[in-house]
Length: 161
Image (cartoon, rainbow, N blue to C red; front, top):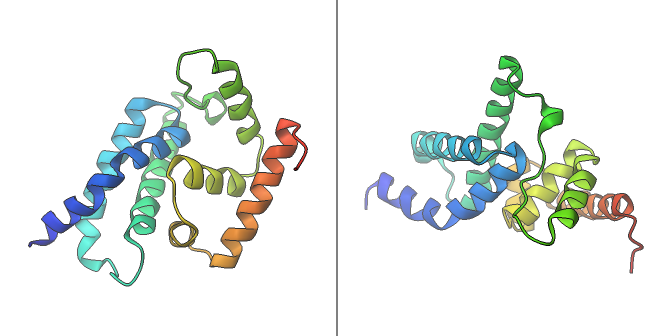
């Protein structure tokens, strides 16, 4: 099987999670689609250098993350939108208010905490995949995720149980 086909088989099941993750960062469906397309092309270009001893999902989401950051930079440079105007996407329905409260709470966190929560809950990355995507040690993943959850609970006004 050629490299292009192997790559396609690996990213195919991750595209939905990648789209949700990109949308959580970019707050816009079209920009998220652009980020995923850009990431797919970058990944294909770099696939031959992928280290198969490492988790593919973490590698892929690091590429998605970098593409999202590039799009945010382009948007900021173009002055078409400011980063403060971005909000979490929310589905229509009765829980829109809850989604907006959660979005505001997440946005109030540090960038490190926002990023690890997005990757864990929007992209469904495992601890090992989080370590790969963020370029940090496994112990740091556990610590940062714990602190991010505590910070989010504090922002939401919830007591720890």
